[in-house]
Image (tube, rainbow, N blue to C red; front, side, top):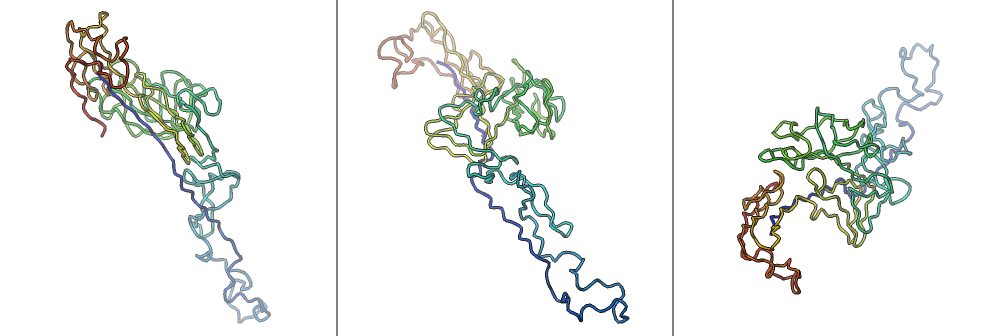
Amino acid sequence: MRGVASLTAVLLLGGCSAILNLGELQGGAPDGGEGLDAGPDAAPSLSDASLPDAGPDASLPDAGPIDAGSCTPGVACTDNPGAPCMRGEISCDTGAPVCTDASPADGTACGAGADSACVLGECLGTTIISGETNLGADSTIGGACADGVSYGVSSLPDATTINLATAPGSCLAAGDEVLLINLQGAGAAVDNVGNWELLRVASVSGVTVTVATGRTRSYGSATGSDSGIGAGEGRQHVALIRVPRYGQLRIGLGATLTANPFDGQVGGVVALRAGTLEVNGGEISAAGLGYRNGRGSIDQLCRHTVTTESGESISGLGSQTTGRNHGAPGGFLELTFEDFNGYNSIAATPGHSRPGEVGAGGARTPGEPGLAYGV
């Protein structure tokens, strides 16, 4: 009896199960090549006129560039054992081994145990999901804020500033990774729906979040524009979602990792970053979290006297029509004075509301099917 639309999204980042084996720099004594014999014949008096003027002392290693074989660029170095996810790499730009900062790939083993992995330069432990965990509402560490808390965006005044509809307080902090995404447009203004990018928080002050690097995409009502963002009908519904990080994420048997459903402004997206991911009989699911159904008949006499609504889509809520709403199908056509209580699956009599029962459409004419988009 109702038009149905579904937008579901699962964003998984990292997830590399391969382990990067970091080699170790093998240090040794200076090369003892020819001409370094310090025997009696090799140490004449400096006043001996037969010696070259101001030549290097042959008893010492050559003060020139280090032999090319003694410096191997790119080899891991262990100058920072207390921060294994910021282990450097050898650079030979100066001719001598220099340890420069580097971040091993997500999923690289770290720490003393076998249950930690590098994620964005941090050594993080294991998180086990049992039962149902909602990233938009639950904290896996027992904190006051949900792991994947989300906020509606009210404006994007410049490339590094994001103004939110509500202040995040301590739920967002410098260093957090966030997902910026346009979840819904308005009418024909849908050019930027689906645009997204990952950013790092530099600072938070009130409702204003400053990111470390400038945005590269647009989120407003027209291509290349950031205007028209906000809540309510006729606006671009843009969300900022905290992307939680896990070293090793394990989803147990029968467990589900999910998020809040789309409410017209935020929700409908499962976003996370994990160094390694194990799904052991559980699931990561965004089923049923997307755009909402159109409303069905509300006739008090249980008659098909009104046309039902199309489903919600990238352009906004549906309306009372049999026409499609972008990707959402249209509603059912009215069927005046036809009583549907006796033949459809929502009747309150025995034999109904069971698998295999006739659907609610009955003899009504269905609306237009939705159009595919985003493929």
